[in-house]
Length: 221
Image (cartoon, rainbow, N blue to C red; front, side, top):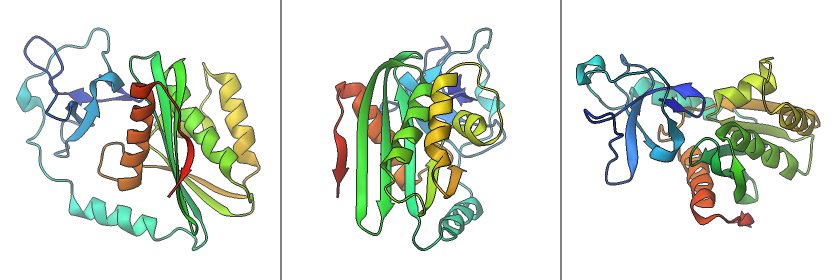
């Protein structure tokens, strides 16, 4: 399946139907040799034409995430500048394209602000890019260090790695322009559905927008 622009393996029955748990999410793996299992909403998974079913033993047995990797994540979070604005931005889409939404969590010395925004009919990539755009536009002081986290490899690729955007070129240009005014910016990839607290919260805000078909505007906590 495809999950937010990334190929994954997803739990299915012998008829090829996705199997969701009590939380409505499906077990997914990024690599068959990786024991870490994650959860994804059915609406975020898209079938890849021509791909068939694999036997259960194609993946190693699921286990807990490697504590060394968890420690690396925690250590990385401590390397941010002391006065940095920390942001997690995420997009969600029910179908691709389909009803789409975004979620953004911003943390600074004043506390936390959150945004849940409905986008109407769009693709998942549009939702991911627009989440980063909203994050960039909320920054009041462009001289402040800003660290924007996203689980979209596509967004990081087209915005900072020189990937050529075949679609969404106007939106990509708009996001790049919004980011260009930030003098100390870093886009940071974070694995989706890996238990990273603020990233999970951004995902929940995006899903909330899709399900409700409405937007909250920025809310301070």
